[in-house]
Amino acid sequence: MYGDSDVMRRRASQLREQGADIRSTADQLVAQTESIGWTGRAADAMRERVRDRAARLREAAAHHDTAADSLERHLHEVDRLKDTIADTERRASRLEDAGSGGFVPPPSGHRDWLAVTIDDEGAR
Image: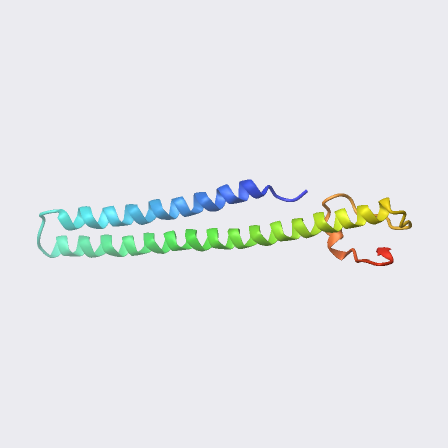
């Protein structure tokens, strides 16, 4: 059987939450650094370095969002194909119940159902 859709949905949600947490951490680091009363070249260099690191953290957060988007697109396609398989199985079952013989069905839920053709003559 195929992957559990609920598990994939939870994982996409976790990726989004992690991205938001990373973004929040970046914002907090910059805010804390900017609020320090330290002045001078070393302070400016430190602030610049923290802003650079925060930008990299935001990039990592964006990658989490991209991964979640990709996982959700994949999940929608998997669900669509599972629905197509289930529909084809139901239609083939009705034909078998009506007495159309000779068709050897794939195992229930198997992707081979995507290759089954059902027409007026039966399933093949």
